[in-house]
Structures are given as C-alpha cells and as structure tokens.
Image (cartoon, rainbow, N blue to C red; front, side, top):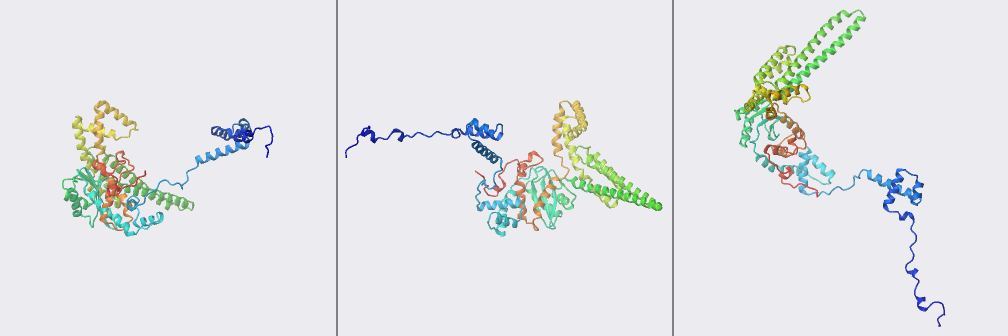
Length: 512
C-alpha cells in the first residue's frame, strides 16, 4: 500500500503532540486556594459575627455555603474542646497478680475498714474473681509474723510521756498505750481482766523494750493506776483533765436544762393564772405562781453560779498559762468548797462531782508542779524572777488580736529589752511539752472503734497487725505540720522507713 501524501513527515505522524503528555491542569477555585490559617480566620470571623456572611464570602471570593461550612467546623471543634472527657477512655492497665490481690486485700481491711466477707463480695462483683472467705483470712494472718517482727524491734526509749487507757469490745478490755509526742501505739492488747496485776505485767514487758517515760497520764481507773504503781513506782501518773472537764460539762448542761424547764413551768403557770382571773379564781393560781417563780430563780441562780465556778476551774486552774502549783491547789479547794456548799440544791448531780474532784486534785494538778520546775530552770538560765517568766508564758499564749496582749507584750519588751525574744523562745517548748489531757489516746480509741465494730471477737494476731499498720501508716494531714507525711514510727525514731506494704514483703504497683 502506498503511503498517503500529506503535510506531515512520517516521524511527525508517529510522535504525539506535547499537550497529550503533559495536559494543562484545570484552574483551582478560590476556596481550594485558601490556606488552613485563612480558613481558620474566616471561621472565627463568622463565629464572631463582626461582618455579614455575604460580606465575608465576597472578600474571600468564596460562596456563602463555604463560609457556613467553615463556621460549623469551628463551632464543632469549640464544643469538643470544652466537653468533659469520656469515662470510657482507658487511663492505665493494672497487672493483677496474686501478690497484688494479697496487698489489695490488706488495704481493703486496714485502710477501708472492710469486713472479710466484704472483700469476697468486692472481688466477685468488680473484678470477676472468686476468693473464698478462708483465703482472705489466710492473707490477713500471713502478714502477722512480719508485723510482729517490726513491733518487737522498735525502740521505745524516746517515749517521754505515755498515755494509757482501756477500751472494751464485747465485754473484754483492750489495754492501750500511746506516746503523746508521736502518737506511736506501743500497747494494744486484748486481756481477760484489767486489774493491777495485768497492767503491771504488761508495763514490765514494755520496760524490757526500753519504755521508761518521765510520766504517764491516765483517767481515774483503779486497776490502771495500781498496776503502774506496782511496775513503775517512781513514775508519776498524772490525772487526765479531759474526763474531768467532760463530766463537769455534763453537769452544767443538766443544770441549764433544769433552769430552762423551770422557766417554761413559770410561763405555763402564768398562763393558767391569766385564765383563772377571767373566772374570778386567780388567788389560788397566784400563790402557785409565786412558788414556781421562786423555784425558777433558784434554778437559774444555781446554773449560773456553777457555770462560773467551773469556768474558773477550766480557764484559770487547768490552763497552762496559770498561777503556780500552790496557788492552783488553793483555788481548786475553793472551787470544790463552793460546789459542796451548793450540793444540797442538787445532791444527785453536784455531790458526785464534788467527791470526784476532791479525790483527784493531786493527780489533776500534777502537770502544774512539773511546769513550775521547768519555768524555774528557765528563770535561772536567764537570771530573771520566775514570776516574770510566767508572765512571758501568759503573753505568748494569749490572743494576739486582743489589744491587752499587745500592751502586755510591749511592757515586757521594755523591761527585758533584747532578752525578751530569747526568753519567749525558751518558754515556747515548755508550753508545748506540758501535757494535761490524754487527748491523743482518746483520738486513737475513736479510730479503733472503726475497726472493732466490724468484729464481735478480736484476736491477738489481728491487734498486732492493726498496731503495726497504725504505727507505720503516714499521716496525710494533721493540725501539726511536723506530722504531715510522717508515720508515728518516723516521728518517734527520727528515721524514715519504706511503705507499710513494702515492710510486709510486697512490691507496690507503680505506673510507668
């Protein structure tokens, strides 16, 4: 076949035009040409409403539909930014092993006050894991030996003032002993009796571990005090003003309530007399009203007088910044005599209070004698009269917001000069170390109740583990800053120790 004759050469006919290899790209719209920053700016302007949508679309050379789309995207992103996170997100993964189950069981019992059957139910419902009641019991008792080891190896020689008390569980006494300074519990034992022999034996056992306090503080329990006299005849046992003030407070409340009752009875009799006068029979009711008013006046006067006497006992005699020991004893006897004079007006309430105060005077005021010795030592060191040191103590413990405090402070500063601040710093630890009440052990007893009410029977093994936990668990908060993030053992010994779970031989879980 003959080639056709045309205007192109054969080589030109076989080569495609250049436009077929590199086609020209179509023209891009203004919306596609916008950068992410420009789109964000357009969406923010649309949300702000500073210009109409049509104006924004015209300036950006885009359609109004496009502007609305960007506005919806920005509104959706803003809503997601302020929405709370979903609860379904996985925070972290927990490797549940046998060791973890054991230490978590200990935490539930000791921290969460959870009963053993509650531990079984919790693992069943929330971990889909079956634990038998016996297995939970064995986990608790497996930690007892290590706990007893740490309890026995603690040195009790730093204890300076101990507080002793008794708490009952199911009719059985539990003997409790606590260091006032560190709140370290060195005695927590279930006994059959709380007599002098039992207390004496336990105190002698503690003495073998270095417990030789300068003094102890306790209530008026006869067995407790007799046992300390047998074991530690040279260690004074101070009285606890907490129980004394509590009983006296109950007396004041009783007299106040009786006075309010007399006032109410007088008002009722007044209304009866008013109604009787309307019928011409007011003479009889008037005589009864006079008798009721006399009873009301006597009840109010007795309540006020007893309140004043006991207020002086609390604020002047039992306070740290008070007079010396002989003066306190004289004032104490005066208060007791005045209460005794008013006992016939309420014998079943005031009489027992008077007898209790009279028998406990020396024990309740024992702290004042030790305070006088310490203030006398400070006076000798700074070569000033003891009365002046006592005045400095009173000013340091007064309310700084009171103008009279600043006046007394200025007067002492004028008399002592540069020695005033040093003297005030010297009496501060004396005041802080003066112990009048066993508030520490009462606080511990209230914490023990949270564990005891779950159990009808207490065993020695459980109490040993509980004492270890209370002594090695660090305080998360406290009114005393020096106790925060410190355990009673660390406060007593001054040495740090690992976490209580690690002391029992377990490795705590820590997130990466």
